Amino acid sequence: MDHDKIGCQAPPEGPTLCINNCGFFGSAATMNMCSKCHKDMMLKQEQAKLAASSIGNIINGSSSSSGNDLLVATTNVDIPVNSVEPKTISGQPLFGSGSEETGEAKPKDGPKRCSSCNKRVGLTGFNCRCGNLFCTVHRYSDKHNCPFDYRTAGQDAIAKANPIVKAEKLDKI
Image (cartoon, one colour):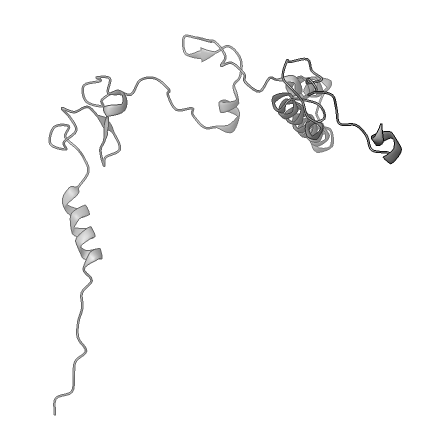
């Protein structure tokens, strides 16, 4: 009752639930959404801005653009953040993936194997200076016919660590 006289608002009766009905509590700082829903909403807004700018670039940039380009650009806006890898048949993807567009080959995520005997090494693999991965048997350079030249690498390291020091010649009296 004192609050009515002063003109202050009463504090909320309890915590408010997220407006997306996900079951978590929201806050006024995140527009009455939980942190996850707020983050997802912000990502969707950024994707929409990016799509709008790319549509503008397509329309203004190329004279031979058709309506299909606009359709493809607008359908990419609703892609979920955690997308699933496309299925492949005999090593060929069913539809174009993002790695082909950038021109970079995606590294193989399979088990790590020894370069000599093709044995699975897991976390215990040894990286050689030649750039290959080896098991415990083939980790030494003489066991896998390593092409790396350890002798010249050692000579270069010694020469770099120990520069030649010459004293200045003095004039003899």
